[in-house]
Image 1 (tube, rainbow, N blue to C red):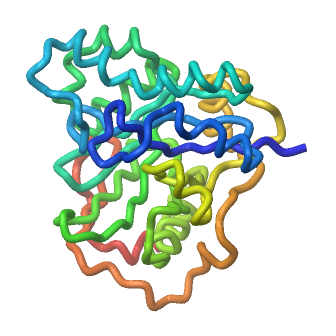
Image 2 (cartoon, rainbow, N blue to C red; image 1 turned 120 degrees about the vertical axis):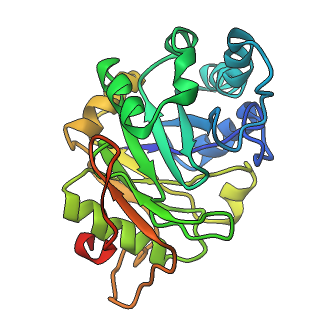
Length: 263
């Protein structure tokens, strides 16, 4: 038996671009046969709706509301709900962080100014993992593609929010090239979307008891499969990157700009 999990989900609790609250997703994911979801609202430097003028403790408390609402409803209905977040750097590249909890956030107000490398080392020290979300996304509000090859444990290759599936094909090839585990997620912002469109996720051979189980499975590359669309990750050789590219190392230093070396 395979167990299916959503890895990338946004709520109105903290994500400015979300339409649905945390509890609104639970019935739909149960209907779709998922074993659990991970709430990954936009964090401090991303598209977050929580006022940055708030004291850190209050900011964290508000940030976690979407997850807490989803977990309360999930506990009632029998769907596992785990905690994560999505942080953004320079308005360009995004990272899904899994493992650390609310108390860890409260204990680290300095994370608001971390570099990619500082984030990665701190999350790893806490027993968590970092996955780069949609690394080849190219949209009007993004001025460059940053591939943080040295500061991630995995790569989100299949992202259901992409209208241009070549982004996913490029991400898949990139993940293979750098030898990182490959994930899929819906990047969902509205609960009704799951009934109108395809949603993605990750399969595991065992039911996850906690976010720590998810972290271990990712870091040990124990992902049993991806839920995505047929042909979504097929590479044809004519995919394009029209933005400038930075490939960054484990110290968050730029080591190359030639993305073709990583495809």
